[in-house]
Length: 158
Image 1 (spheres, one colour):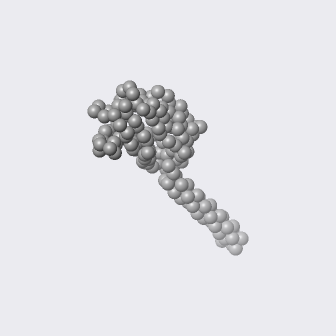
Image 2 (cartoon, helix red, strand yellow; image 1 turned 90 degrees about the vertical axis):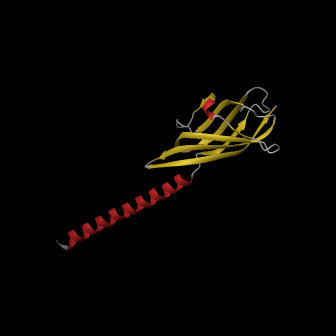
Image 3 (tube, one colour; image 1 turned 120 degrees about the horizontal axis):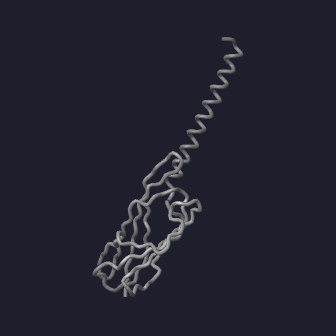
């Protein structure tokens, strides 16, 4: 092998090594950003029919999302600070009123509304709701299970 061939092979090897290192750095930074990102940004959940006078609680979620995520589980509890009562909201009985772009299209804007029955035995009063949503999110080569909590949701039952 002559000196010119050796120089060309060494230069090509250095270029490939540099491209590999840059690719690994970019993928690492992308993974860290994806891993630390929330499912929903600028999002909020509220009860739209406060105070609840009939047997149905109406919720709305508005916000935006960056990654493709599939909802796998939702669970929520309603707490009454005055009486100490705690009720689990039954998401198996949830009915969608409106679902615009539910985690599946390209706009990233989420606006959906659903309703569920008032829990059996829930006395009139002011309740604090904490909602936990579990998701499987996918971005490029990465897949991550994420949990996002929404708290400070107020429910008034009359």
